[in-house]
Length: 176
Image (cartoon, rainbow, N blue to C red; front, side):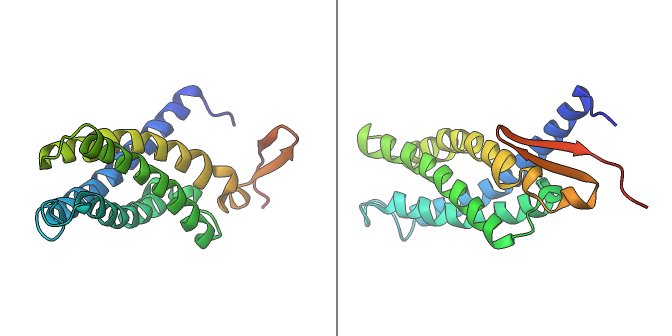
């Protein structure tokens, strides 16, 4: 039973769309919390590093929403048996993704001098979000939720054989 290129592309597209939908929900959480904090208790007029603190808080909340959505929907077939390890790996990738967004915000706000709420949103929630999303999707797909790392392989009759150059996935028929 060979998987065709069309099937692989459709699977990739489906996973990408699910990732985008989960990301959109995470974006709403991130955007809403960031702007609530940025315009109230963490206003840059009152707290010098307010935009950075607001972005860290909003992104951490969005990471939690995204992990749940990606674990139980986008990559549900590839969840790891070791939930704690998967969560830590997801967190590590997400924190680097957050660093990308915060780096864009920091550069725009403190280096380029664009300090308005609009500029902070464009740098942190548009440019940073796009760059971070590409990074996160690649690492979630090929590392955190990689099919070869999930507990699903054995249950559907797929053997994973390690070699010096990598892993080979062999389809096998389930025993009856």
